[in-house]
Image (tube, rainbow, N blue to C red; front, side, top):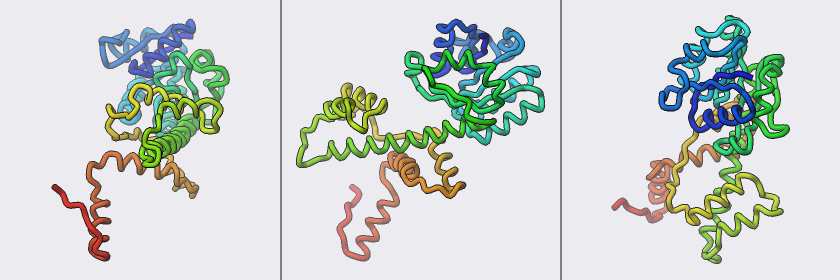
Length: 292
């Protein structure tokens, strides 16, 4: 099957390569001319045969919005746009409606697998019209491992499911992080080998997982994680998951706390903690640590 791939970064380039290995005709476009096969989106659209399929792998937000709007002016009725990035599901619902007015189809494909997807395959959660899902199914079957893709609902559903997937990921990462920090901080057993523990947990324990496999890999390379600063960014999906939980009146304390923990990681000196220290000193005379 022929497809245009827009965005040839870490994810897009690997997906294009996996598709080519599967026998598909992939034409890639990127704003970086060093990796792009065509100079412009206009040239990409011209090279694709009708009915065209264009898969977008660019950052969520303005980059995706601009790409979709540009494609809307270049594509024709019965073409299909697939957004495989981490767009907000409400934006995906809107984009599907806007493109439908032009007769252009839109699918939102929540994509999980990261930099390992080239070898292991990608988990794909697709929202949109089912007939369009069936139309691009040859691409999905090549990208995903066995049973690794599904049509999960109408427009926006794919990115909604991926959003919740990432919210769960936040909680899992936080749980592993807290457990290993308690192990590392033990005064009773100060010489615990964290890599050894991660390796043994990988085999038969109830907490074994791919994330634990990756933890073992990271600890093998840097047992004390001394080469990494404890600063953790967030790309938006955790926030959106918490907001959706509030909207639905669903208690989600683990997801919320794991998001707030990331915020804490970015503070060199927390004003909130200063306030607590000051108040403890005021009401109880508790000692404070002075700035040097």
